[in-house]
Length: 550
Image (cartoon, rainbow, N blue to C red; front, side, top):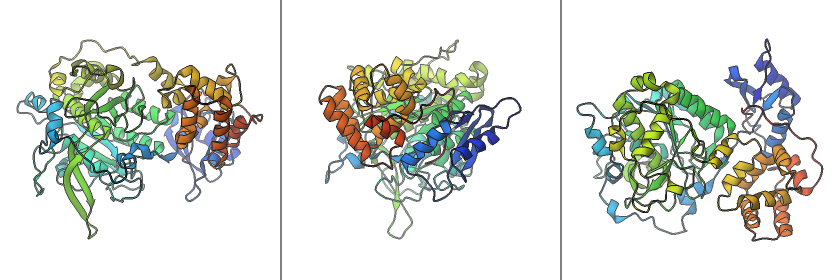
């Protein structure tokens, strides 16, 4: 949450007063950015409220006169982000035969090996620290030299302790060893690692960079906006020059975006996976300050499972990429191997390694002195896009200008002028500045016409097209959350927006979908769906912040 403190007022006291009036007694106020009045309210252990109750608490906070903005920071499951959850039952994973025993094909396609040659006698990637929010690390021999795996600088925000090791639990939505796999793609030593008896091996894009492992979650599909916010701030505080995020969720969080902005202002290049098996680009990749990376194949074609859209900034190899694999052995210890994996997780890891090469090649101090820390990421993004290679017939509208070319990137001269800050497209700008939730909903339904979505929402919320912005100002972000949590509801809205369902049937299904689980929806949204008069209407937020961890 964000509070507005006048001269002489204590922001922490204002937060405590607002929490008490919102009936959140016993919740702890954790400072995020005290100068801007940003705090997080965390519930007591074993008292995590249901989603509907969390939204009710959020509305009570928003109604407090000293609160500028409040939002719930949910941890929620997005199973369609997991390739295992979308695979056909009994289907066997297959990989392009062109990648068989071709352990460095992804580096060749990204022109990384040629980029290494430009370093001469200097170690490629040396002196650069990569922050790595993921599922943590394991002592896999292919992950990195122990001296460059900076475990002491990491943290476990999932279990709230100092050791970010991956416990390799393998539940329904868990991704054991995911952090080990993506980390190896960033900075594994070239060739087979010492102690790796397998014939397969991994070569990382920046083999002499250092890595801060940060355990943010057990699963790339169990997304915690609060955990990722904490991980980004932690990486910046520990001196990361690059942050590689192979995690994502379908909803924008102002608190998460503020963390990204703090990182970029500090001189950190932030990259994130565009997402898997969903049509739209997930967050934080969809934020303009983040470099969103889609995935390509060994044949220079977009990977079929990659998210796509105007928010994609660049594409990199991500299908059948060789990476370290860690599992639990029958005796309870670690079992290590090397295998191929699919996903934009590996595409962004490769690109993060390339970013580390670029910083190492020019020197962070030189970049800071030349452009100022707040402009480093912008300069990198411009050169990355200008030097990429564009295969014939490439879909630039959905997959960015082309595929990463590390050698061309390093060979390009640094620009004399700082590029102007520009949004890639109007839709991305709208999502970034939206205070109603409408743009987030539009983002979730990229194949539906905008006017159709607006009309569908108006009918669903029992209001007119004219009054829709005011109603969405009140409940729009909660409605976006419900669309994510209830795929059938989202499908109904999309069908209606595309003219494939009658207004009565679509509106009835929408109301029924919310009514099925009152714990998930607030009374305020339920009243809108049933046409009852809402109890109050919040004023437009003046700033961004965060509230609670429901």
